[in-house]
Each structure stands twice: as structure tokens, then as C-alpha cells.
Image 1: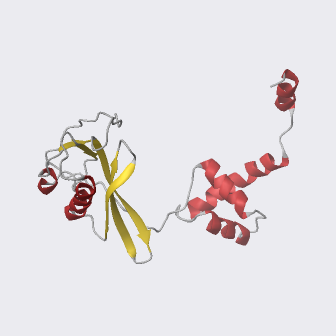
Image 2 (image 1 turned 30 degrees about the vertical axis):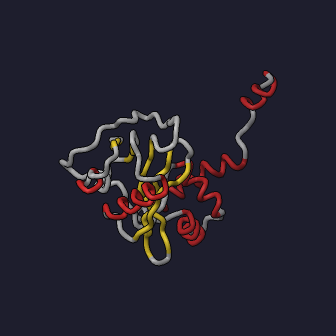
Image 3 (image 1 turned 135 degrees about the vertical axis):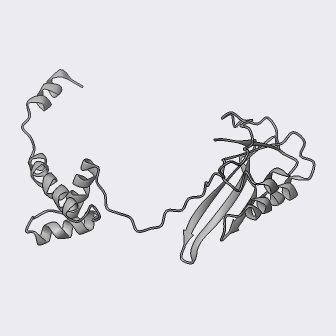
Length: 192
């Protein structure tokens, strides 16, 4: 940056937008507080218009972001990692090194969800760290251990039954700490 540009910016007077933001920022925050910290940008904008303030919806959203406030979301939070309390966990054999020199040396698995019109669909993927391909997967309407076991069976079917030296890494969710999950002849690895 040129020195003349720096000093030009330093001595420049505040813009009309920044002056207006200084006036409307507290108004937006007060409306948010008055409505029990529930309203989002659209409802705050409508409330400001009803109160006689001439403000745009995008300006309300920008001011809310700048103040670090937001409305309450109605969507249900889905929690996929539910650690089993007191359950013994597999050791972390991978130690954040997800490289493999050959296929079927390291598999990485996780469970996620996809919201649909009919409800929530849970998906379990098993990925080979060497080729980065999905070797097994399963979609179900539940998060039980059988879903994870079905994905492992698919992976074993696609890659063969001789899987010597295979390590499978997962998080510490209850599906991955279950007794049935640990019965497969694989070295299990888990992150805490």
C-alpha cells in the first residue's frame, strides 16, 4: 500500500453508511432483545419497519452479523456421536496419520445424517485411505450398530475376506464402541 493511500484513508471522514450503521446498530440490537433474542434478520427488519425505521433487510442482516447476534433456528439438532459412558474404547492406532501405502491397510469410517422430507436418513461410509474410495456404505432410518455392521460387511464383500493388517479408524460413538462392532477381525482405532 502506498503511503499516500494510507494517510488518505486515515484522514477520510466516516461514510454515510458507517454513520447510519452507528445509528441503526443499537436499534437492531434493541429490537432483538425486545423479542426475547428469538427473531432473525427478516423478522427484525419487519419489526423495524413497523416501528418507523427506514432500513433494508440486508442492512439488518449485516448489522446482526457484525453484532454477533442471530435468530433461533427451528430445525432439530441431530447428534450422531453419542459416546457410551463407561464403555471401553479402542486405542487410537492412527494418531492423525491417515496415509496408507497399499489398499486395505487403513479404512476410515464415520456416521452422518441427511435431512429429507420424510425425516432424517443416517449414512455410514467406510473409505479406504489409500485410494480414497468408498468401499462400504449403508443408509438407514436409525443409528444402531447393525447399520455400521452392514457397511462393514459391504466393505468386506467388495474387498475380499483376507484383510490381514487392516486398521479401521472411527470416532468414539456408541455404535463404534459396541461389543458386536469389536468382534470383527480388524484392528480398531478410535479418536477421542
